[in-house]
Length: 265
Image (cartoon, rainbow, N blue to C red; front, top):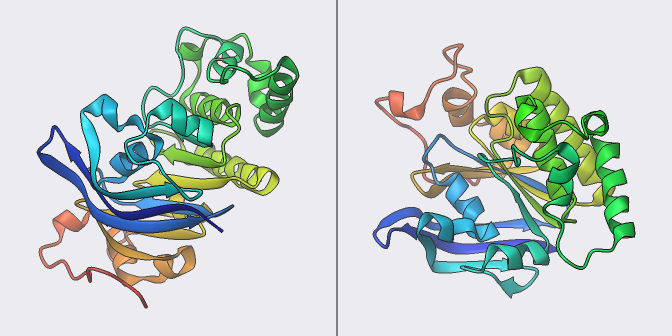
């Protein structure tokens, strides 16, 4: 079943700057999909369009459609999308720094959730992130980067999402911490049947967990395929995995950019 269908999406900032230009993609239920690309490619804007947080940046969907479970949600308010089951783990401002871990977990829960259901969800997140149980009284601002990311993911789970949007999971974190977070996300998908859309600059990180991936550049999708096929693609190897020169390079540093506009092979 197609859970999310993005059709020819265009996003404009300040009524004049086009950041996302006619992209289309679909996500199946219980699938993990990655949006790859360098900084400024339009990945985070796409997530914010899906979650409804565009209005905070004076941006809006100007053309195209975002369809979640058969319902159009373009330019919808964030809290309404959260109620539908779309929950965002943002790149910045991941936790409330002045609240404890326990208070951070409770804060995003919608009104009307019973105390019993709240306890059930808390038990669930401590199952996935047992470290947080020992940190329940720690102030959010005193957590390490990895602990903050765990808490951000746990807080999202407390909202009982169907579609989890994760922006830059690996940013600023040590590789061993990132590997552990990826393992936890895999467990969450398997046990809860969640659908996950993950945005990443690091192709190795995203392709380790994703079933399918899309590569964005300058507001366009330029490549797509299964994780296995993307890892094997020469352009991904050269520009994102650094296989040819032994170190990772940006496509902007290459004078002759050979990438085709779309890859179907």
